[in-house]
Image (tube, rainbow, N blue to C red):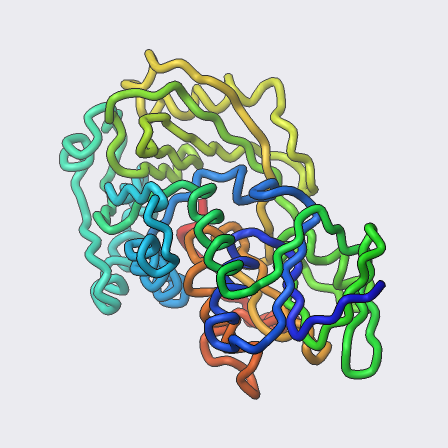
Amino acid sequence: MTQTADILIIGAGPYGLSCAWWTALREPKAKIVVVDEGDFACGGIGRNASSMRMQWGLELNIKLCKESIAFFEEAGKRLDYPRGIDLRQQGYLLLAHDESTFAQFKANHELHKKNDVPSKLLTPEECGKLVPVLNTEGLVGGSFCHKDGNASPFLWLDALLQAARRLNVEVRMNTRVDRLITQGDRFLVVTREQQDISAAKILLCTDWAAPQLLQTVGIDLPITGMPKQGLVTEAWPEIVAPVVISFKHDFAVSQVLRGNILAVVAQDRPDGDDTRSTPDYLSFASRQILDCLPGLAAIKVLRTWGGVISKTPDMQAILGETELENLYIAVSAYKGFMTSPAVGRIMSEALFDSGAHPEAAPFGTERFKTGNLIPEPLTV
């Protein structure tokens, strides 16, 4: 049997469900279907630290995150989710251990002022007062914004899921799409479960796995998976108030509302879709963390985990219509959680507005052909 849909969204992560909710608000009569090959939160959203920051080096990213953080602050009300999403706005502290990184912070600070981002530059001593467990030896300075923070990825996704369903969005889990077929002015979406769907428009939100489906309609985009690993500790009284990012140590460390400390430490691994945690990761990550935050030494690690984030040549999102009419894509390039409110709005408008959406256009696919990439200088 073949189901029909006005808009089919493939992927029920933060991008997919945010786009579904915003689109249902904008076009209440549209039949919107969301499918996902796994269970709730089984993809990247369930495997990341889910933090958010406005402190970026490009105005494009600053604006996306500024809008998104404002939405997170009102998420309970906007999505009719009284439980809330465990939002914890204790700020982001970016650390510079060399003069060139701190010079980048200074340049970013001017851009932040232009965009009303309340960041400030800190001395090593001020960084130490903000995070007493921090090793300030060799530290040149930092950048801090009190509006940045983190939240629960599971509560955020559940809030979106429930809100979308209240607007009559159909969300089907455990439905794997194997290929797309063009049929005149529509698409036939072939699923492994033999529950095929005929759709007028498709929005692909499968992030690093997007190329698998794009290739079935002859589209090749430079998207790959980048394996990442993280760890979580036992719950502890507040010891790391802000999210701490060290470019020298290539990590992000944050403490969530319930007291556990999450750390994602970059380790060289080949591109791919390997979600396993490697045996040497704990010792490697611990050395990096304790060199910067030695005051965490007494806290026990509960477990490590692995995940995959999407990678593009400039580590920027891909948003908008592909070269195939009515086939759209939203790939996060590892900023899916923190930009999902703004991207949902933008894509809901792009699906129905004629011509290129002005906010999505810089993130379009054309840049890979022209070479006009937009690399972000503050990527960890």
